[in-house]
Image (cartoon, rainbow, N blue to C red; front, side, top):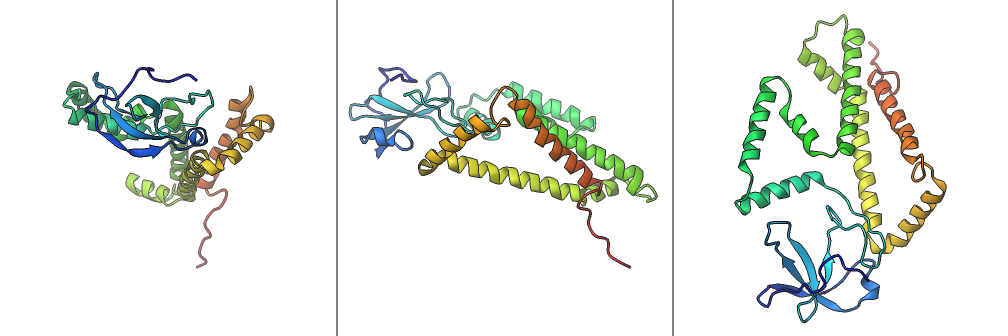
Length: 261
């Protein structure tokens, strides 16, 4: 069985160890022994790691978190699902830098100056910063959603409120009350709920067999999930959702009923 850490790694004699505990998850049935946790701090300033050590202090298991974990396979070679949280990672870097007095203040001050220049240019610095630290897979849908909102606002200005003498702020307020914003909010809520369901199915041990069967079925029969053209096929429902959002924003579908005078 391959390890993902040095075989001779052991806790120092003066290390503070946690209370005895057993391993959890898919490997729990293979090892009934109890271990004590050891929080190892990287002397080079890297992220701390948590290990389970035996009675002699020898590291037996690396406890890799399910969120922002770095190891995608278990020691026996089986795959394990990890979830990314870029915002939590960013905040952890800032907090660790402040507590360890090793925060790169030159980069922080450079970011402050960039933000000041952006604000003076009329560009929201917060939106720019979010686009910088989020991965492309997360920021691209946000960018496309912004394009849809721009298109809807442009249509509202030129058609629906063409004969109304509205200021820019009033037009933005009218756009915020459109059905498209409500549908977009539903997209966000639905995505969050789906993420919670996926996380529960992936992390709950009793649901692991059902999750594996579902993944096996999807790999074999769902071309949108796996296969040579899965990425291209996945764009089809995405384009449909974008088109529906644009049409709802223009009141083509799901338009609110007008009150009779």
